[in-house]
Length: 348
Length: 253
Image (cartoon, rainbow over all chains, first blue to last red; front, top):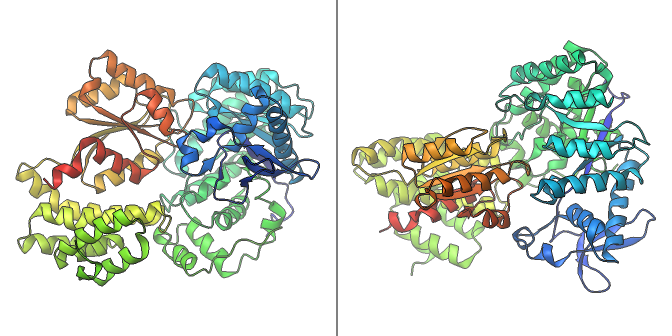
């Protein structure tokens, strides 16, 4: 494969307040002092416990079995009592370290789910940006669906480890380009339309081109532009994979080698089992189509491991068939899953 | 009370044995299928299998043989979908399979709807659906609509980025008793609350039940905003819709 040694830019997405761990899983356990907690390996290698506060235990999410661990860490570190505040901070430090060690080039921060109040969200992003910047040797990526939150986060950035990334601008948010230009920042532009999500590769290319052209016109250089080609779940429509891959190919061809093409790669496997296997195959397919960047969990998505996977083995080919729309209703893939023929991908 | 051996269809018996663990759900399904005709069990089995063509053919045959449309819908299609819902909730089946079942359901309903409407029997219910103002993400909303239509609801789809006024207009225009809003972004989620307030301001809040859903939405947010119901996925959306409209009570009255 010709892409084997190519540089792949990783935007680590693990510091999002949406992230959950399952209560039945191995990470949720009883801490030595007796409370229910999320177990983690701290930056110094020691095993530590982030206690699950009562206000989380009262939520229906928790009742139904999931724990928003990053949200807990941020809330406790920002405003909790000691020793819980210090634990929250350690937890965030561990998230930073693991991703950096796994090769993250940017750390994406998103606090949109911290609260429903804009003022709280803004306060949280400012705090988190300063906190993570003090811990991280790599630059940040400030992510929100609200431009005010993005601006607040980027304004709080000192950029010590490099210029932060603006995530993201789109046709419904063109003004974000002006902000990126004024601060000389790299920017993610998405292929979303002004009135809705793209229905095929053509709409992706048209939307993305309008954004790229607007960015170029405002003086942002190609290497500072990252196109999010929009990855949708293949479980919903078997054509979604090809729409995205074709768009990646066409955008690469149109704008040449300097522009970056990215996406939230793990979205592709939503609604299916064996997500890691599907995600791995999708990373390879995206790379082959011309993507050079991913918004991913860098711990799970070890690109060196993925690129060295045997892409001729049966389970990998089943995953590829799903992603390329060759397995109607994912029938063969799910049959193999039920027969126990889809193993967990080997660790790096 | 019926026993599982009272169910004649092998496939249905196996499905219940293998996938339905909660005692109350087992009992309800055993009672339901034990009294359903073999032909209805066959329709349910084909639906659970996601077999579009067979559901299509068997539904037509059943209606041609003189079985009532309502019975085919309740004992065949909706009964089958009930098992699909349980299997999905328990992670025995996945999104593409549920969608195949929904398409099979739709194939069956295509024969049934004209008969019901000619007889003056209303659809299970009428639902207005849309993503809220500022939110363009419609994959989840579209899944809900597929499942609602598959379960016999009439759905008016307002698409994405729906302003509160547009929701109000649609509820009034279609005389709908139920409204569903979805949001994928936590920054657009507050617009659900604003839409509910707009219904209060327009003095229409009592006229319509409002359900909400979407990735960042939780039961707590739904309660805070004053919504009547919340569903965590497309099948929960159908269950919530039925609950809010009191459909179960109506169909078996």
